[in-house]
Image (cartoon, rainbow over all chains, first blue to last red; front, side, top):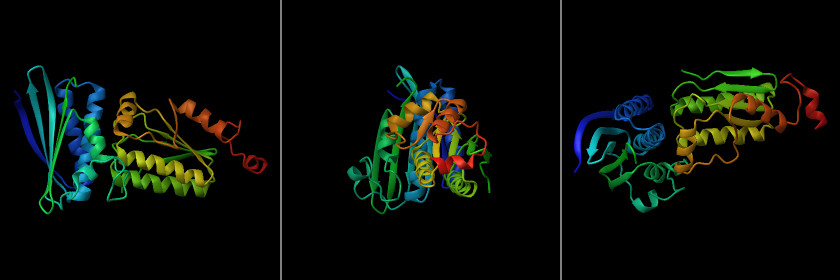
Length: 137
Length: 133
C-alpha cells in the first residue's frame, strides 16, 4: 500500500524553471535520506523529462510527491503537458529515436534511471509521464 | 546574459563549470569555446565538471559537440573531475561520451592534454611545435 506523505505542484515552462524544479526534487530526495547515486539518477531523469515537456509539449506542470511503501519511501514525479501528444509511443521509447535534433535518450534513459515509469499520451491532448525513485531502489 | 568564463593558459583553454547548467547557458559555452579555440590557436580544452551534480543527455551532447568541433580545429578536449554518481548515471542513461577524453582531476587532465598534442612544454606558447609535428 502506498501512502502519500506530501504533494506539491510546480509549473515548468522555461529553462530557469527546470533548475528550480530540479533543486526542489533534490531537496525532497535529501529529506527522505536518499543516497547520492539514487538522487543523481532521479534528478537526471527529471531533467530529461522536464526538457521534453518544454520542447515537445510547450511546458506543463510537475507534481512532486513523497510516498511511502511498506518498507521504503520514495519520490514520485508526474509530468503533465497539454501538447500535441506522441503518435507512436513504442517508437518514442526506443533508444536513439528523436523527432528533434537530440540524441533520443530522454524517454528511454529516464525509464532506465527510474524504478517505476509509466507514460500515457493522446494525440492532440497531451502527455503524462510518471516516474518513481525509491530511497533504496 | 549569464556566461561561463573561459580562461586561456598557454596553449590551453580552461573552463570550470560551477553553476547549474541550463540549456541556453550550455549552448553559450559551446559557442564561446569554439570561437576562442579558433581565435587563440588553442591546442587543448580542459573542462572541469567537478562541481556539476548532474549531466543529462543535453549536457552530454554539448560536451561531445565541443570535443568534435575542437578536434576539427586541431584541439583536443578533456573533461575532468566527473563525480562518481554522475558517471554511474550517465552510463545508465545510455551516454558514454564517445570522442571525449576524460581524466580524474585537473592535473591529470593537463598531463593528458600535453601528451595528446605531443608537447612537453608547461603550457607556454610554443608555436613552432605545430610546424615540426
